[in-house]
Amino acid sequence: MKNQSIYYLRDNLRKLIEMHSSVSHAASALDINRQQLNKYLVGTSTPSIRTLATIASYFNLTVDDMFLPPDKFARRAPNPDIAEHLPDFTTEALRAIVQRGTAVQDALAGYCGNYFRISSSPNLPYKIMRAYTRIYQEEGLTLATTVEVHSACQLHARDGRFIRKLHSLVVSIGDRIYFLDASQRMRLSASIFYPETIPKFEFLRGSEMSVSDTGLRKIYQIPVLLQKLANGPLTKSQVKACGFFDSDSPEIGDEALRRLNLEW
Image 1 (cartoon, rainbow, N blue to C red):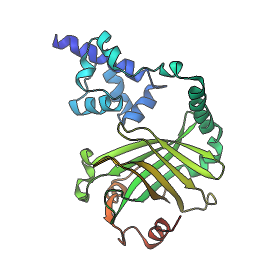
Image 2: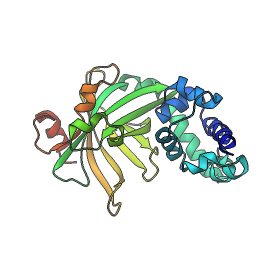
Image 3: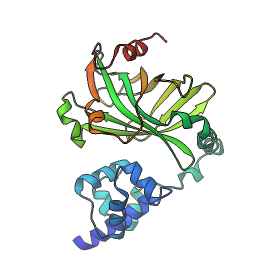
Image 4: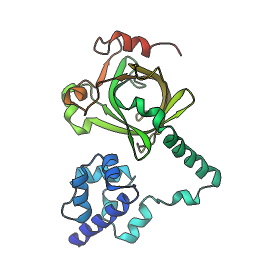
């Protein structure tokens, strides 16, 4: 029965990955090496419990769900055709958002690159959070991945248990840039930025609306700042530079703090 469950796992994982446009896109969304993900799909390798928990959580499932027989798994797994059963005006709105993202690809190309994302913290009013954001284009869309380090101790920055990744669709409407993020199970957030002249800008100022992951899950709105960095892959030093800082910390920089604290 144990071996049968492994076959169920492989088949169920295939069904989930098929919801993405490609294995490469799924690997990027799940933060798994593409070659390793292919090994899981063909059955030459089995995900660790930690990796399996990450995959299951991404699709709003549990680890136990992943080992269910196909008929039972089908009742638990997300339905990729759910849009077919939505009202016409809803599907039109969703389609318009994706089309908008495709239409403005050229306009957003100048913003692709690496940034520090600096914001106040809704749960820690005297702290500033600095994260890493990469804006890039793929399959006709502009996307953003943000890496947050949720630990006051910078020595823990290399430990994945203290790191959260957020994935956003980036669109441009008028004189504003929108980041739409639905990648987290318990939260939906939207950020709006006011672009400056490109390509000679260093900061993008904006505002984020979301819900806290802790406490009473109150809705909050906070100022947020994107600070331009040199292009290239994410480095260990950049991850170590992320985390929580005092609101007047010199590590953030006077110019960034001034822009973050401007009245709206």
